[in-house]
Length: 333
Image (cartoon, rainbow, N blue to C red; front, side, top):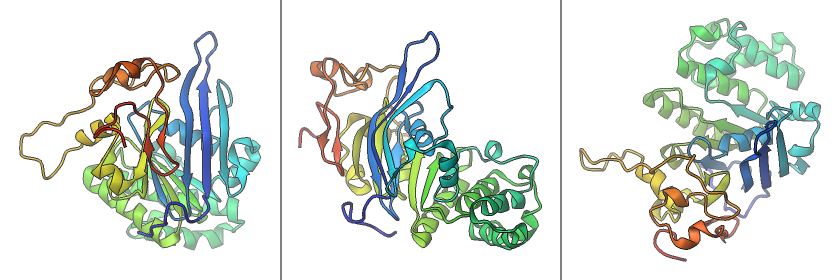
């Protein structure tokens, strides 16, 4: 995989202090994303990892301009190629989506239109963003299906989504995302609905495509195992904040935040003795304290101190490596 020194190329996407607050009529406001900042450089793969409800998917939907129009407030900036995506008009954002930035969702069946052929769904993207005629776009669509490993691609062009297996549907979605050679690809749990063997194939495909095209990839997942072989940099989210960030080797060799350790301990390992139990993180994401006066993870944390329930931990580190914790694993730096 192409490795870029973290500080080298200018970020393609620079997210700064992103906050997303949901407010339903008559209910207390809920902050789903609470001051998230990260960079993605050309050709780099960056992971956003955490349990359901940690804010990782809301982060990507806010960047893509796909949150509902009402009932939420988005603050901060997401500078893509010198332009703040969060301040673009809906029509300008539609032009960016598909052409410069593409997204792969976790459920291919609900992401594909059930009454339109696979070929038509792929050619539509090229017609809209590249001005191609359907006649010119069709052979390119077959090439794309072949590139993402779909056998007999010309025959598949006239299939409907229900005629493909889950793995093939996910490949078709990746083909749609790649149709306009986007510079940034956001993949939101792209392997959740697939069995383990197909998961591995899809991840290998994404890795290969990123290397071949130089596309930057943001990988959103609850599974640190998915991140291990794919991401250059990992951001661990909890309660809407990044609680730890590092290069994948450093993060796996010496995780500092107790939550990161908990996520690692809940992954089955091939080198563990048979019968050894996994130790998942106790409690649930609902057992949070508010970040403004405590560490949100304190009620579930094995390392908790008194201060953790009285003050918000600051960020210990820099833009590349760091954590947000009063009592990190292995002691202070």
